[in-house]
Image 1 (cartoon, rainbow, N blue to C red):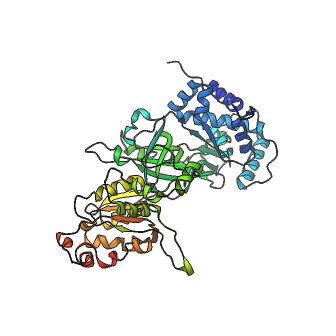
Image 2: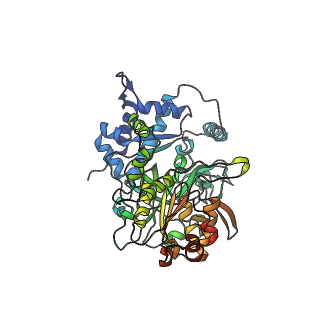
Image 3: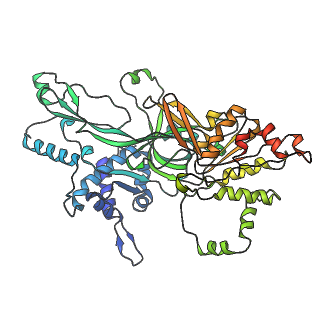
Length: 519
């Protein structure tokens, strides 16, 4: 295989950004990426998106190279955008922040003290990563099919892949160092260290020509004011239950989101994430102890909310004229209710109640008093009347839902658990099924088989729609604004004619505080 000329590849990227255009309805040329470059030059936009479908129209080979070596081509396109920005700058930027003032001052000092014959270490030169005020991301081609988490293997390292799953954990957004700036205590020279991975080894000795010639051994000290930080958030996604083979457990993957890709997904969301699959390179002592194995992560480029059971995006599109006409037709309520689990015959009233549970009501707060808008349903019935099948259908139909069983769940698994964050080492809260089903539906099958101590844990959720936590020094209240659907099976005595149902609720199935929260 011939060695690839990356300088020529960067020229290809430049030509694509400058020459690609689309035509509007009037046949006028619209330079799509030229408009983005103008917005970047005037600080009106931060994210620069490159759609691979557009690249495929111009150069299909370039798309293949990007998908196979996405990390390298991200840097090439970022360099191309950085070099093209001065050509698209139409006016001076008046608003300057502290980083602009710092960069301008350092460039002025560098030009004053520059010696034409001086050959400095590249680490003492001003890096372009510190001057960039934009972020470059790829949008996947429409022909690319999302992969299952377990299908992303070692042969996908460095490739641009798309995976689907449910978000199980999302950390807080914290600053992450992108460029580290050091100052020498002997010569005063500044040293810059661009950081490409989540971990790095700080520089200690000054590499400047003065310290090397004098052998003074200057020590470097980190200057946080001159360093560059970006927003960072770690997500954890887990594959859907229908993607798990028989006899296996669901697999999960770490997602590293930076910059504008943070705060786009919450625990419980069903997402399709496109990114670069990379190994987690350790530094220092951890590098010597990790052995031959390496952890992996996905560096996110695009995060899209998806429907749970379909392959289309989750959006808030307006209703069409045909849909508006169907709403006004007579019997529309019965038609909607009949479309719930059509393979199950009958149960018209039950399906109407489930439809109301999916739609919900309006939350009110008159004079500071909160009135929940969701309803909770206790679906009682004899064994073999398709209660669990209705639960499974509602779980697939609701955009946000969680399905669990009473025998396989504990109070902590339903509410929240205290976990240690593997990145920071701090104690954090990881939400359970009720927290993940926030603004959705939580289906709890075999609720009567749950232990009494665990069953009382959901009383606050059904009444106040919050979960109060006081564990390991963490005192907080989590939102659990969900509707609870549970189908307990009554004992044989409950079917005796003349026996009050309240006696069955209080003595056999549900403790009395929980039984008052249905409806």
